Length: 162
Image 1: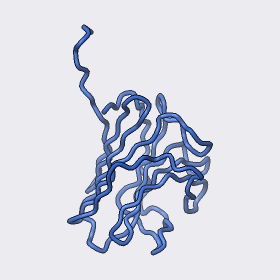
Image 2 (image 1 turned 90 degrees about the vertical axis):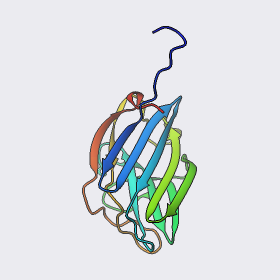
Image 3 (image 1 turned 135 degrees about the vertical axis):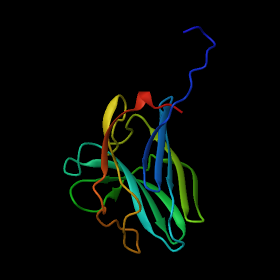
């Protein structure tokens, strides 16, 4: 390719009813934008993106919570059928959180490479899990089991650019 030609950025997306997750890599950072629509004014719940093979072997999880009109993004880990626990070190960089008119928008990033024992290395191709919709949680923010089985995708992050 001749020098000086622009290579168009082509992010990847996961889309299901009322939900869109857009993601892509730039340098060694993966950027995410999660949009949920149709959330009632007093709505609360959670959605997540998991990295790894299964809950049994353990998943590195980015959790997006909607609680009391606020949006919170956390770096967590789950093994087995229980609530995930926050990582000792939060490796998520949050850029913007919005919840208005029934729409939740969360923009954040994390490193492609793991910087902590509980974080998955996301270089090359790796298994991702997308939780569908906003799922139930306790008033304190403890996650209840997802209402639908998360969608499994093998993501080759180098094919997703921003």
